[in-house]
Image (cartoon, helix red, strand yellow):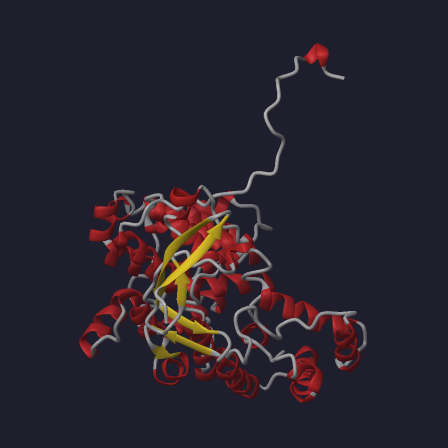
Length: 429
């Protein structure tokens, strides 16, 4: 197969190289197109644009494949946990036993935040969205570790290990504190001996002198949600992290921007939309049957089914679907919304209308159900997503910083007014 592409503009032919990825993906290298032709490419939403070359995550949406650093997500989910998956995502290799022990110890014991940061929560109104607080506090966190957030790329890379561990550990604490502030509850100190997810649930739900009862199936399900969201190629928030980092911004500032991008309902809010849909169905007195029929005619939209990337089954959904059953059974929950969810899933998987269109339940459908069952409030769903995505953001920051890439500066096709003379106030009509 040719390793070049020819583009014809007017009467001129231009030859451009083709880049080939390790999994056979092919891309026309247009980096010199404007210099050679005076033209740029137009790709609104960047759906056909490769913005970088990366070694972190591989997705084949047509085949339903997701791999972290070459390892299938199914194998990671079965054999690993979030902390180990974070190490793999950030550093590129599975850790040896001693490496994992040291890494886990570093993260598990670093959850406490500076006392001065606790005062910052008082500056937010009680109705502030947790994502507002998370973004602001992650950026602020860098100011408490000025040696880790210098905006001097060489220094920030030199101290990368400390910065990455600090963020992975303390993001849970900030998230839990934002929840408790809104509930008017006292902050709960972390327990270093608890696992990553168990400690987060402890800081969320424990009361003074009355610790939250940790159930293994609940802890494991939350760990699985984090693990399955650790990275997902160049999505909106990850691309934002790389964009901000390309200007030389430190890791804390870059992931703070990622939180803002993730907050959007078209990105991180999908599992919230699932629960809202279930509530609307319940409020209408429907068991899901009418809603399914309306979805088939276009009157309603079935949230949590299908995926922009996966044209087959979302590989994460099957894994999380099994975890959802364990959580619901373990907690012995009798929730009409969860009954509706089960009915929607069954009907959609059996109905040829949805099967023929590959509209299978995706990871957002099951994560919404699990978080609802655990008792995570709806406005915290995206915060959970952000905690899980932190390894991917960190890994992409590191990859870009080490690559020496130029600052990202997309072009545009200007469609505004052409040059015109300024009109003084008295002459404007």
